[in-house]
Length: 332
Image (cartoon, rainbow, N blue to C red):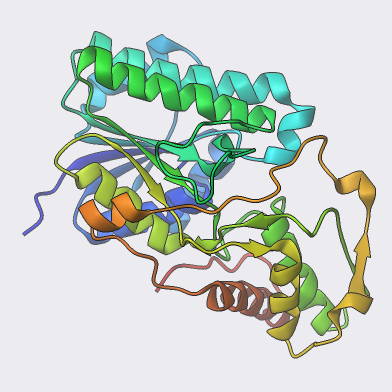
């Protein structure tokens, strides 16, 4: 029988935070979800009524320390971040400030309060690899980020490792490669594609506009990766783990698979390429080696690339057919 824990999730209203919150309350844990404002608080309380939503500004050490002193959590999943790679070019200062210094505040607060046994999970990212020197990427691969977002994640990742090694903090990282679900925000290209294809299939638009479709990513199903996050923090020792499928697909393949899900084979005639959407420096190709997680955590992805894309498109079709956009998807 699982011992009930008090668990804090930052970024609780994001894709991973929502899925994680549902899984943790289902396992009998007491979950406090940290959100940025009243709108997110209202949404989270509606989406997951068994969790508690609390507004917290983690930009100051004092606010984080006061929160921890009052709540005394057993575990913290630090998922909150400025997570759009594309937007990080236009909002680089805020991206670095949020992703680096907010993480540092949590680490410093835990250290000052001597809460070294509180298990801390940090959401690292495959964007840290950027221009990798070796394929596939492992936990030992040299980091070469290609965006302000990637740079911020590298710095935060090394802070977590540093506090683990310097102060004995139980701090782990999950280097998660791209993972998607119908909860993905429309600002991300994968959801832009699934929604656009659904609208084309229902005659609501004529085309889909994208940038570089030759980039390739290692895409997986978000609920699988959230299971991996839980396993990382439940592991006997704090370590860094890659979660990935080990298979890479181009954005062109993503588009083709999405159109095939609605029975459209000649998809190219619906696609427009706009060079203005190409990033100043992009990650061309990454693919992860999750051997360590498979060996030590018994973790492995369950959903195929094709099924992931189809589930996203089908949900966007459901939204259109229902005539409303506020249906909240939940994992089975």
